[in-house]
Image (tube, rainbow, N blue to C red):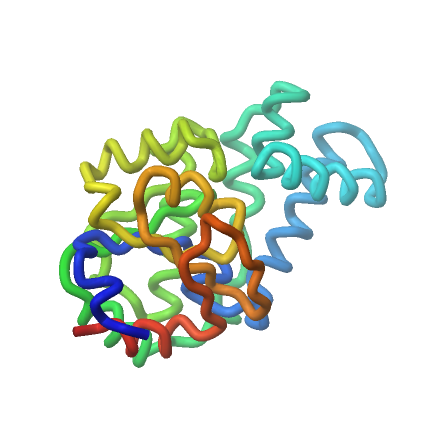
Length: 215
C-alpha cells in the first residue's frame, strides 16, 4: 500500500464497533441481546418479533434506535443507557494497534453510532486511551445515525475537519458512501470485501494496514 495515497491525510476518522476491535470478541453480541430486550419491553412484542424489528430498523434506518424513534416515538435516553450496560472485559488490549494509531500524522478521532460514554469504555478496554483528539457519538450527531448525510455533516462540522484531507475507517460499507461523496479517503475494515465505487481500500487487518501507510 503506497504511503503516498494517504500522504494528504491530516484527520483520521475511526468507527468504533468492529473497527477498533474485531467482531470475534463478540462485544456487540451483548448489545444485540440488550436491544432485542428493549424492543420487547417498549413495543410489547415477543422475542422473535423484537429480533426481526431490531434487524429491520437497522437495515432501513441505519440503527435500531432511529427506527424506534421514527416509527414509535421512543425516548432515546433509556434506550442508549440500557443497551450499553454490558461486559467490556471481553475486549483485549491492543498495544500494537495503539502504537500504529499514535504514529499517524495529524488528528485522530472516533465517530460511532453509540454514545461517547460507551466509546470511552471500549477505548479504555482496548488500551487506546489518550490517542484520540475527539470522540463523537450519536449525541453529537443530533441522535441521527450514520449513514445519514446530516449526521456526518453535523459531526464533521463540529470537528472542523477538511474532508479532502481526511480518511475514514469503517466496518459497515454503507457508512462510507457519504464520506466518499464528501471527499474523504475510505477504508472498509471487514473480513470480506464488498467492492463498491465509494470504497477506496479494504482490509481485514487494521493494524497491518496502518503499518503500511505510516510514513
